[in-house]
Image (cartoon, rainbow, N blue to C red):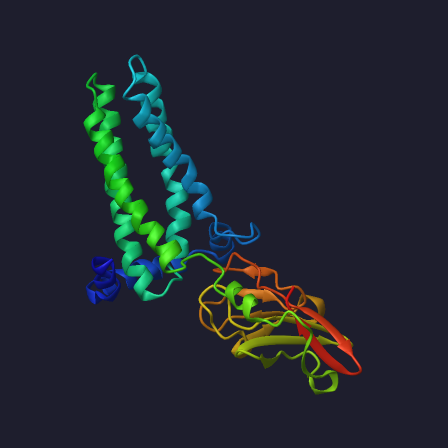
Length: 279
């Protein structure tokens, strides 16, 4: 963990990070949305990773069994071939992370590139009649290190998670007033703060009000400072930090990098007062 902490603070990679990031963000927005997993409800990268990981792990088992050389080789070929889409989704998510995560992510990706190179070398050796098992097990070992770093990004640093969701636990379960309906501007987001310092973004259309958590689920950017695009029921708010776009009436993620919808609260209007509560 101390090594990872030092890696997160190591600025020597930042020049490379910025160059790679500029290439990735130049891709068409529609392509980036697909790779982020927009519409899927969560990031696409963890889904795509399952195929190469499963193939490599299964090949490692078969390589230990007699008479399974051809099956193991086929699985290694499948794993190697399916790395590309998983990597494309991973790089796309990486491009919109904070610098500390990007530093770890760069090493994670480098380890995976080395692992795939070892598996490719194993395939070449197998095609020439040699065992190739040493190379494939070396690839699995390096991939394991890369997987550890990926786990650190996901679970220790919350990369790819909906970082707004924990705030739901701090929203009162009972109905809580956030002000009068008349005080909310029509067609313009308004931010109100609940007890325990939870900011909420309110959107009014006539007598209907939608309330969502104000901190963007991608990297907790302040949606209340974001631009509103579109009109009426299609109006969306754009996060000022990374451009994640959420439909105001239902919190649906329209554009990434956020793949998760923005969490909504229950809303009611009682005696002219707007009240919210946990979903």
